[in-house]
Amino acid sequence: MKEPANKVCRPEAGRIFVSPQAYVNLETWHATATRLRRESPVLRIEAEGIDPFWAVTRHTDIIDIEYQHKTRADPLSTPFRHQCS
Image (cartoon, rainbow, N blue to C red; front, side, top):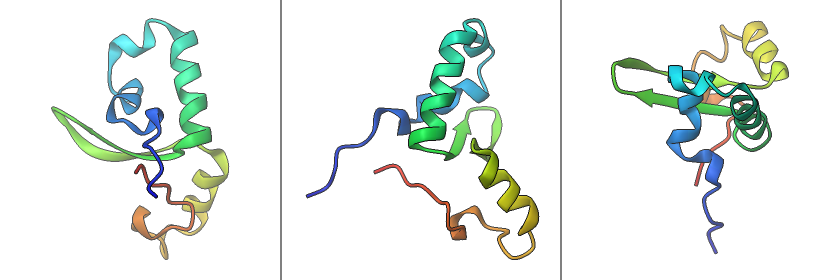
């Protein structure tokens, strides 16, 4: 049986990185960022008017990318890839 999709995996969760309005309430911004780190630490962000990008929210994943960028140029091939179902 397929597990239900996690709310944080919805595309709107990633809006905190591209929407100026998201920064108005920093408490909400930080709560959403904390949930992303816990539940969907690598998230593809696609927003109108902005080139798609990967938001990597865990420090250890960022370090892994930095040290292994030549062998892991594609985020989809990384061992820390997290998918939203």
